[in-house]
Length: 330
Image 1: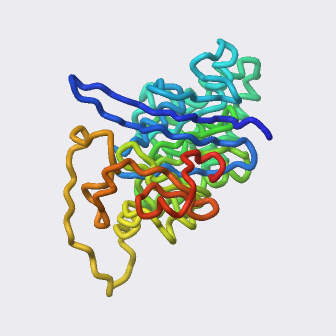
Image 2: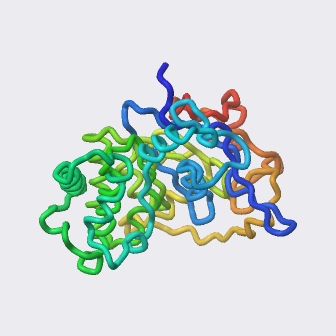
């Protein structure tokens, strides 16, 4: 069995604010294999722990517990050369398409910096070719982009350039944190198409972080649904979206505005206490769940319900053997 390119083992993140403790991410285990390349979505509302998970995977945050392994080695213990290889092969695309640009530099500078950093031996002509190939991979014409300043570009062009910047050094993994949330709807399809192209043509594994299940459904292979730092449901994207088993996932699916004039919207309100007031025990979704029971005050385990489909809900606990490891199921 080949070693996973990037693996999380019981990774969690705890923040302390004064005397309060906030569990931004509860223990989670999964991996990204090198082959075949896949797009895994991490979905959930604001505050669910999506960006915390991404930051830990990128090595920007250290986990409170657990390990992040890159090709079988703990990221926190990598040597200089090993860490450089990790930084080269695990790249990120961030949410804001404007913040990463320096207005005083042309686009060429943004693309050339990672090439000089990780491939210093390339000639000027080779660097130019790599930049052009990266731009073409995200659907941009190099002749229309190179030599221009950020203010001369649209938001959609800037975000696609961000993707090109991440892939210009040919990484193995791309962490895309809400890459389409700040661009017009008309441009989202272009960026998502670029991500799919990277998976299919460049064999890049992608962790796609979003709150939008509609886009996730169209581009992803698997999905992990987070709520207040805990995994509610996970598995094959088609199975989870078309047959959600957890009440929270069902709530997310039902909130999608499908074009159905006969649809009756659920106006029932549930309590939504502040995240800092929730204790560590019990289901995180308990206060909002329409199916809650007294037994839900005990933390449910993530269990396999069907092949490549897991859920963390008391309703399903008797149906399967307990298994909190996503590695064998995603």
